[in-house]
Image 1 (cartoon, rainbow, N blue to C red):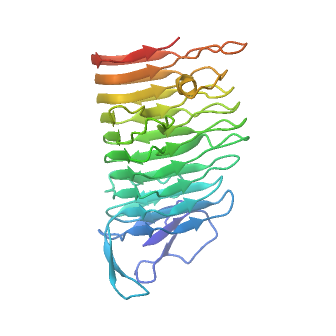
Image 2: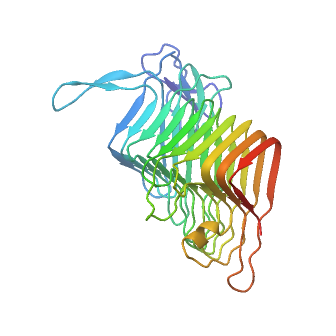
Image 3: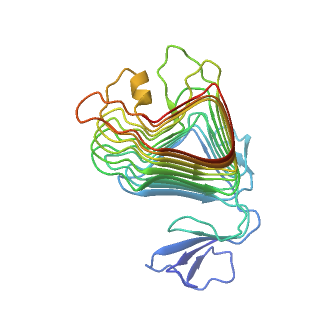
Length: 355
């Protein structure tokens, strides 16, 4: 309904509103404003939107679905509420991609895209191979703000090469639950480095988090659902998760890797920090060192990152927590610290390694 400028009461309003205070100014935009209770949705169906190197692409919309019209046939097309991507690509190499879905009146900051405190937030759905990509020689940042977020066979990528990427590569901050599902054996979130640049961090804050993979192919190489690893000399990205209940499960017989922040080259692994109320893990691996590299038959020389898990309860079966780093060449690698700060622990058929 309006854009707020320079943090004041200066507004550029939609022509239909009666309280327009000012025409456009050259001051920096500070906020997006929504006046109505049902701001309209945004849908991307197989399209590709691209901005130039280092530029930003932002979709800030509502949760109210609507009926569009097919321009070729004239037939109605139902558009679901929230921001939905059914296939398609959003590309901002080295820049920013910002997705925000709201469900009621309030403002969204154009600086960090955080909503007004207490603002009702809308749903966001990424599916059918949808791709959000800010990868470049120096990767940018993907920010997502909303209520419920679903990532179903879709990918968010912020990979860097020979220049340090943005300090935060992927920033997901939602008030509702995050659900990640994979049937393809392809990562859902990547913030990797393949050269001398350091990868950025992945930060996730959600009500609850459920991650599942049904992919099974004994002949395929293990891939991580969240992959911030290094295959070069740059440091791998760190991963921070803060949620309510965390549930992670892979298919029986799979080598399902939930998070890999480890090393497959000369760079060091990144830290993983998980804070949750209750954690339930089944058929999965979390690695900050060279475990995945060794499964792939590689000989890395980087050290491992640290792994810290804090929860009221931890239930884990058929799992592997690894902060291991075995010396293949001189100088030797160093394993990472592994900390479990948990009130109740129940483990079955698992392994913990930090050598």
